[in-house]
Amino acid sequence: MINISKLYCDQITPGDWLRYGRKDCGERPGEVIPQTASSRRPIVVWNITRTCNLRCVHCYNDSGIGKSSSEITTEKAKAAIDDLSAFGVPSILFSGGEPLMRHDLFELIGHAVGKGVRTVISTNGTLIAEDTAKQIKQLGVSYVGISLDGIGPINDRFRGITGAFERAVQGIRNCQRAGVRVGLRLTLTQRNVQDIDGLFEFFGAEGIERVCFYHLVPSGRGAAIANEDLTHAQTREALDRILAKARLLKQSGRKTDILTVDNHVDGVYLYRKLLAEGSPRAQEVWDLLTWNGGGLYSSGVGIGCIDYNGRVHPDQFWWHYDLGSLHDRLFSEIWTDPAEPLLQGLRDRRSRIKGRCRLCRYFDACGGSLRVRADVLLHDPWAPDPACYLSDEEIGMTESPSSGSRSAMDDLDHQVLEALQYDFPLSERPYEVLAQRLSLDTDVLWQRVERLLEQGVIRRLGASIDSRKLGFCGTLVAVRVRPDMVERAAGVIDRHPEVTHSYLRDHEFNIWFTIVAPDSSRIEKILHDVCRELSLEPSDILNLPMKRMFKLDARFNVRL
Ligand code: SF4
Image 1 (cartoon, protein in one colour):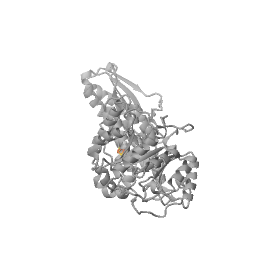
Image 2 (cartoon, helix red, strand yellow):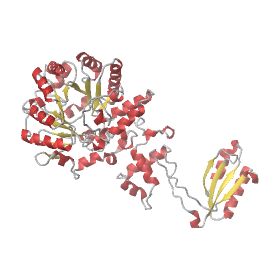
Image 3 (cartoon, protein in one colour):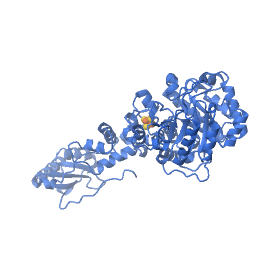
Image 4 (tube, helix red, strand yellow):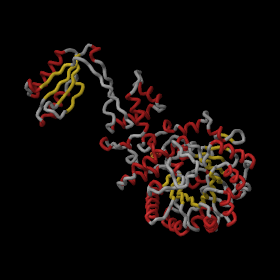
């Protein structure tokens, strides 16, 4: 989730403690802010039933009227809640199908609340009558998220039932009247993207403070409408509209909580926008984004899912991959199984991720976004997220050497630079050894090194041999040449293969170079040739033969 109100509009919003490690306005007494995003226990989305009174075109678990299956029993569900509570899960999000169609939903919610777990209901809202809303309030549900995908008929076509919009709006009003914290969930597609302004007007008129804009995930029935997903250009336009509207709301004094979900690229987009605006908050936003890590600490880390059969998944879009079943093991055991390959991969995605995500300078903030989208569309969970709408240039893949910036280097760049500086392997294939140490493909390591060379972060890679041990001798030379002669002098000096390197200094002796040669007579010959070709006087050249060698530990702390 990318909290636009927090990041772009500088508002304090509920959930900041868990999302960004900061105090917020909804924190409960005794709630401990996690030290790191990676150490968080997951928010668990629990699709408690497959039955639903609607038939939405984008339903990720193919729910509907009459669709039931061997759902987990009340007794088993309560035992699972006990385990989730003991495991430290901060929140259970009861979803479906339509969770209100499950006969024991309120019993389970009451059980979870009694165990001190936050509870959320994710519903289509059409079944929230006045007394239902009052019950929800009495139970202590933290939040109700109601799905709407457009105004009036747009929503109804999406939902597959005429009148769904009116009934959902009534559900929202009932919640508001009962004092239940309520917000909207909305999936952006070709069907509703033109009406973002109209949607914001609707939020304003209905007094809705919290809205989550979802990006389409082609999972479940969502796969069938993948062709209705936004183009990258439309996604950018939609983000621009949402950002502008959120800021206007803030300026008008309205308290809002506007978020986008399922594409962590939005965080980077927003950060770049702040930079372009010259906002003094850009650095703070970068810090928040990198604390959160985007996809890095999302599926399989900060979020998990249980389906109606009690099967556990890395998130609610991974139903094609089971981590285990509550019929066999506790959630806490499944979640901490060190042998589960996908979970381990998701928790160590940095070393697995490929292509442009691997090379992206914003990886620390985005984390390669949504892995399930790569898995479903490209059949490779470590491929780049196809929904990334930033250009190669924007993510730094075509950056010119002079445009390097602090944020252009990510943690993997730091690891590579450290590996090159410290303990470089003496081996026939040193880069294979380094790649192994870093758990990378050798090709990926090379891509990184090449980019760092292109950017000028690495100037040269090469051996530094102790020439004396090979019987050679060396000297440091300084020459004084007229400023208009510098280029020509450098050419004359560097033509000699024995010159290891030369450099310009702000001194009357303005060109300095070192020579390593088999003997001193060869050095004398080189100096004689240089003086002759450049018409230098003996007083224009200093020959400073090496007497003792001192080596400085010139390795750099690249993380400063
Ligand atoms: S290239 Fe990958 S890591 Fe970078 S912004 Fe796009 S999805 Fe995120």
